[in-house]
Figure 1 (cartoon, one colour):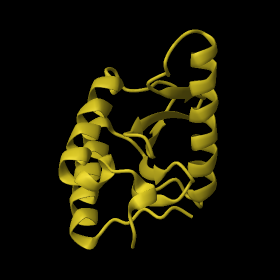
Figure 2 (cartoon, rainbow, N blue to C red; figure 1 turned 60 degrees about the vertical axis):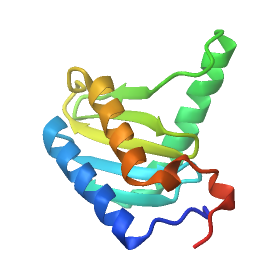
Figure 3 (cartoon, helix red, strand yellow; figure 1 turned 120 degrees about the horizontal axis):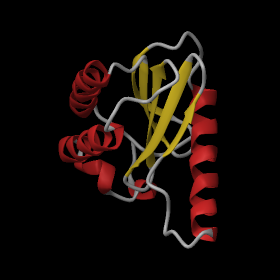
Figure 4 (cartoon, helix red, strand yellow; figure 1 turned 45 degrees about the vertical axis):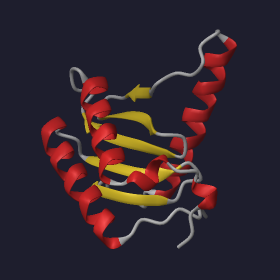
Length: 139
């Protein structure tokens, strides 16, 4: 379990930003999770416990990061998978958080990278603690 804390006022800001984002990109579900798989905030629904999704998304992102380094990239900026009925886009929020986004259908929204980047900027602005080393934060 992470030692990351989000206070009520910050949680409200995060939820509002995520709800607006979810509506604008037409995502079924958006979860902000710590890299250890702990869920910080979520909007929407996928009809299942999201904790395993958060844990596996973190592992997937970390794996892609290692592949990127093998190919001479400092790190990949995101990971995405598309299926017949759902698609997923995973991107970092600073060093210790991930945004996991589930979309209906076999395609991701056009310009998802731009929309995601804007949301990340707004989240970091709204909650400055997101830019701190979470090992030093306490509940």
